[in-house]
Length: 319
Ligand SMILES: [Mn+2]
Image 1 (cartoon, rainbow, N blue to C red):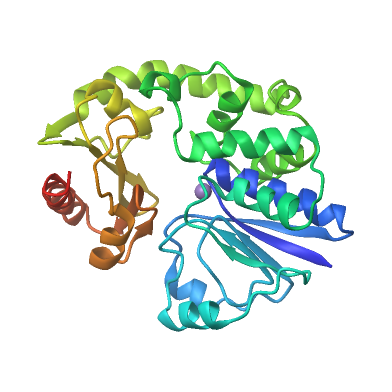
Image 2: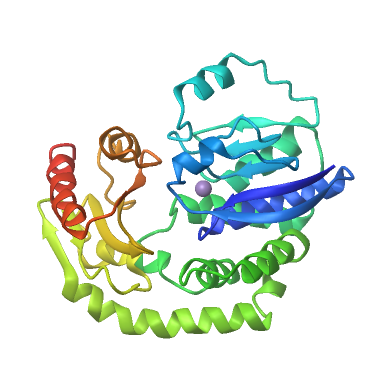
């Protein structure tokens, strides 16, 4: 069967999940059709109505009942109570060709797909797929020693991840990378010209953006707020923890298309005791995410600015 693959775009784990799934699909004689990147949070109205005419797989993002294959590790994956009920009531048969798997404890969705096929089916994965799952588990959960290491470029996997997530990748770059990750080692992919060009661009932007970030970063209690929404600042995901290691959370205000998005995360090197970011954002704003990271989108800039402060105040009470 030929599957269209919907994946969490703009996220290394999303691309790596699509790559890992296509590897295992090919192995069982299936193939893939279109790759469709989605941004988080998905447009719920559109997602609810989506028919998915061709057989589809959805990875690292919001549940859809029409998907034949679905893997996710986000606790806010259900946008519809009925979908959630039906999913939980259904008896998931692992030994059919279609899977719908949720594991919110899995550090990455790539790791989840990898473990699903290698453990439940005892399929031996080649070294490059094993490596990819290992690195996705590290990168998606920010399992680094400190912020400096997380922003570093020492390993091929980090350079590739940066080439993908910094500037919004074009669909053709996403396809190129997904295909490459499913077939080749990261040492090899790291040297591909388009990967190299995008990585070097990130490196230059990163050097320029660090002083900018420092200037626009405010510490409010134990929460940093990063203003400067009009520009995309390379390295911003971890820079706030680098500048304020004592902080517990960060709120970044970003401009994405005509939306103002608040991206909220916890300091992986100084975590709060009971992080509930994704669930809180979902309940309050219809956003979503993990327990340790999430986002909410606003149409008006002033709403985003006001809510950034409200979120910071809420989080300060839950450190
Ligand atoms: Mn993920």
